[in-house]
Image 1 (tube, rainbow, N blue to C red):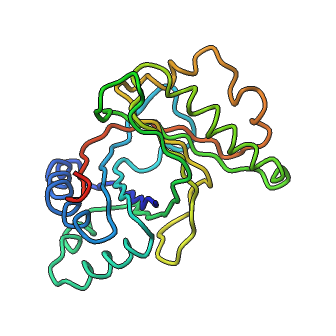
Image 2: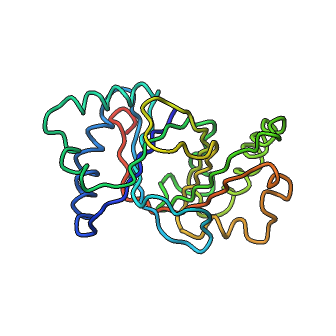
Length: 229
């Protein structure tokens, strides 16, 4: 499974409501119903005292797809249609980026919570330093088998994913960090609360990573493909 992540800022605040309404009720449903799509999310970056790194774009759209080719095919189909919605919105957007990521692990429906989705996402992004690449498999094993299960065992967590960036000819903008960890929870402070009092990266992995960023987002909308309902 793969994620396509589309990021952008809107030039004019007065258009936020209209832009979100179009994206949520017209654009995303049209994409997600196509072959090879599973679901889509719209999220908005929000400020938080625990964030790290450059804030980045305010609005993000995430498409879960069976392959990158499925998204590219949908993109070409849409762009070939005259009067498609982006013709109106392109001039109102800035800092537009598109990247692709392979889902390398996923944790759904933690056992201590009901079957529901959370309202907030926390995204932790890092690169692994080249001279430590022999430790990279151990880093991923620790992250998947120890760290994420430890974090998501805390109250409030709903789902989590680990992603690996995949370069592609159709990406736009700078490639993001190689590894992402995304946590979905009920409250914006759930990740900081889960890690409070603990040594960052268990006191072992910090020398092996660089470009560490941590961002917080509010989930605006989720749309499922008909076969996933």
